Image (cartoon, rainbow, N blue to C red; front, side, top):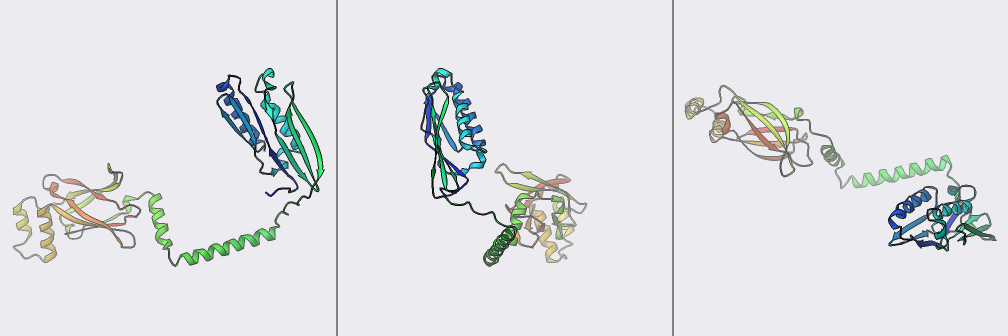
Length: 304
């Protein structure tokens, strides 16, 4: 708000005094009073340091109606509540230069707040002519609608222009992938040419010590899984397998299978190798697949 606007109220000056050696006891009560005063519309800041306090009136104007029908009386009452925190004998040691100005049409009401010798609050007030400004007229519904439509048009224009440089679809998906938990049941695992030798029995999320996340796949061997070199030789069919079949058996012989992770758009997220050698000794093994940060995993493909 600018100065001299009708219906506004400005506070200036300060109130200061000592705590009389009861700093810790009075500190909490002073802070509580400041909270109450600000909630009542009084624009002040309180500083308590050492064995003294100071209350500063902030000159930024506020609506006079926030302090009721008689703002100056409301300030005096709040200031007296502040004095009552201290014993009567110590109130006369509080010094005040607090003053306020209330702006009305064509005039301003000036008030000074002083601490009397008996510890009460005395006010001295005068009204003088002043050149004031009428407050802005409230917006009509038509003006509000027009402003809303203008803001919407500007926002759409900015959005349309920025869409030339920003992929909002991808940005939205990244935000969604960060906020919404991954549903592991919807993650597809394509075992490809390894389907004859193993199956995916379970999928579960787990956390790494580094803070990342992994998808743990529980793989189970089938009856055709080669446990020994002789099984590999028999599965090869004396070299009659096609190239994918031979590469699949070579991967099982090495004990490692390659994996690739994709999002819903088919974009590859990450890749690596899973160790399957444990299936020669056990029915099942658990293998971790690292999850790419800020991306939603949709499919895993096993290969050689």
